[in-house]
Length: 441
Image 1: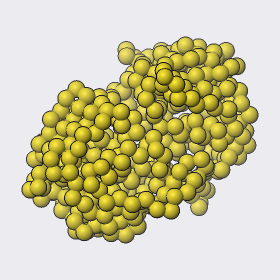
Image 2: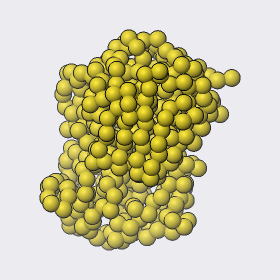
Image 3: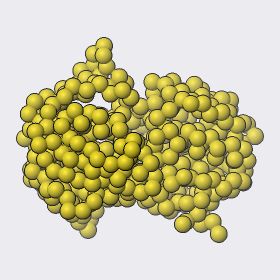
């Protein structure tokens, strides 16, 4: 176990390139493995979560190799022709990998056993199991649909029309992935827009995708059995990861950093919109497009923040960023009220409860509701002087290290190992910008 501590830092400066977008990295490996021909991926996030997806795609028959220059090359098997894995698919800490790959297996006439670490085995899979069962897959496992879980893919998968009961890009993507091997059109209706990387990348690889905004919600349809061909993919820097150095710069006086080549997908950009509303000095330059995704550079300067109300409808565009937003709120003047965040209770940890307990321990005034989190900042700053239990959650761990960079006394986390699932060398990169992060003895 590695425990890290962060203490009050001087100004953060310089150019920072955070790791590649995790969502796009997962999807590039999966779709490359389903395509015919060669896919090359540049900028892939080489965190543990994504490497678990790479290993799973190899087990399903795709050739997945990393070259010395950091480029990844995938030779796919083609839709409908995956191999049955000889061993259990261990997805580590990654709910994205588990749910998306369940969709892949569900649409193929193969069986696979899924498992993961202690955190992933606690997470519910029922919301994926229900629609994939309608497509024709069968599931055998623990009560509540929790891992370990055996997925028996459909021999003749059926196209379905399914309305998501809760906005979830993972569930939507699992259904669309299963729909790739159906004879017909698979449709997902989402009540609120969620990140659309799957739809964008489907088009990039050659699938026919229709998206309509109707009174019933956003309607996404994919035509099954497309001509799927290998493509080049350039993965932008992950906006979720970029939020950590961004908030660190905002709360550290004198800071001025540039975050390079960050994904600007509007369905992922809610945290930056929120920070700007709070008074953050954030400027976006050098806008461009890579593989259908908008990209740009983000300059962040230290700012005096103010508390605001964050509407529930923004939650799908920033669901992973509420922990680090609550850190920004701890240094803002007044209350920041975050609504519609109940989904945080079924992430890698109960992020609402874990953040509330940790913030209170560090001297921050916080109120936790079933679906809300209210954080009241103070002009007197944050006391700190706390050891936080991160509960095997990489975003909780990084959030409290950022809190420590601005607090009056150091803040430590009990276990930093999970940070590598999404942000390898987070501590080293932040130290390079001027942060004071060290191993706790």
